Image 1 (cartoon, rainbow, N blue to C red):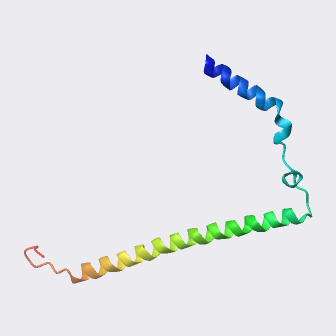
Image 2 (spheres, rainbow, N blue to C red; image 1 turned 45 degrees about the vertical axis):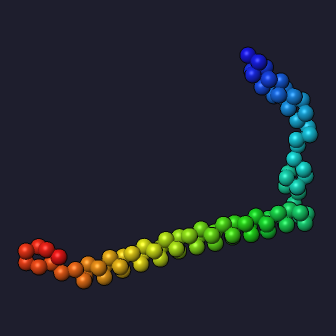
Length: 87
């Protein structure tokens, strides 16, 4: 019961001071400002970094997959089974 009242009190307090949590004009989309263009460039840069890291990880796994495939092929080519079925 007390926990419920605490949550209700917290919710009512946050509801009463919602004007303090409003976004700044940049967040509303004020076009043409240097801040907006800087934020857009920062977002594009971070997307580029994320894409580069993901491409590097996928390239590594493709390299390992190809390497294992070649090693398996080399091992299977060198294995000889005699007439009785033994290696």
